[in-house]
Amino acid sequence: MKKFNVAIVGATGMVGRTLIKVLEERRFPFAQLKLLASSRSANTKIETASGVYTVEEAVPEAFAGVDLAFFSAGGTVSKNLAPEAVKRGAVVVDNSSAFRLEKDVPLVVPEVNPDALAGHNGIIANPNCSTIQLVVALQPLQKAAGLKRVVVSSYQAVSGAGKAALDELMAQSRAILDGKKDFPRERFPHAKAKVQHQMAFNMVPQIDVFADNDYTKEEMKIILETRKILSLPALKITSTTVRVPVFNGHSESVNVEFERPLSAAEAREVLRHAPGIVVIDDPSELAYPMPVEIDGRDEVFVGRIRQDDSVPYGINMWVVADNIRKGAATNSVQIAETLIDRGLL
Image (cartoon, rainbow, N blue to C red):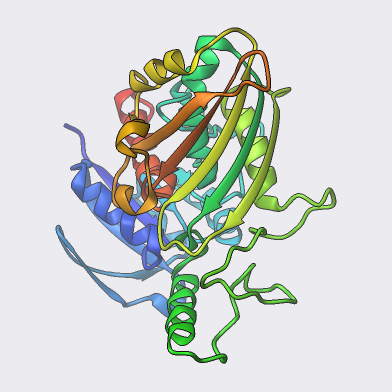
């Protein structure tokens, strides 16, 4: 099997470190692995199952000889360096939102739209974490009965905001449990917000900044990315995103209205046979997906599938996935594997 020279930009972050782990777990055929980050992280040593690596500074020259580059260092870095990587012969799988809605950039979830990879221009966008798990569950239902309208409310873990946010949640929780009223408030709803909220033992109904329509950028990502991935530009879909004091694992309450009849039992069977999905749905045994139980898994978990009697053809369902793995690192590696399988890398 051919082997590839691989680079990870943002290698010291949560997604970057998980990318290394997923590549090793899935035995991705890399000949060389180059770990890149900002100048302040250069020379950091990272120990992995395949050896100890020294992090290098992410500069254009670092991509010489690289076949495949995973980017997970934010939109500004991607915009500046991804074209430089492509110029030097690399194919880029980008985790930021920098290129997702560009017409000539494929936005890909391999279980859903692998054909979108054909004819890529060197950059492939990895969707938003909440979008990924949503479309994995929606696409088989779209094939079965046609999507008429989708309402999704997400309950998103703090890991989606990065390690500093996780550290703040833990510090707040300890302080409150110790009866202290003074604790850090710097990361919620986001680091640059003019008002900072308590995250511990609370929920914050804002993820990212507000757009002019009073939806947050996170909510608009779900709406616009879902339409693009499913090739349904006119899909009626609305979203509310909420940050919850869960360490890892995003959950979504999804209401789907169909064009054609589809019972809850039929939807359950459709989802059971769909790629990348595990159905956990047995009310008699109190069985349904929960973030604490899917941590570290790569599948999308679906439960609480039931009829919505308020519309002619509709169901409700509960969708849970590990946002760092399937929502970012694993989906990126699956994209790369699909490129190899299809002779596109």
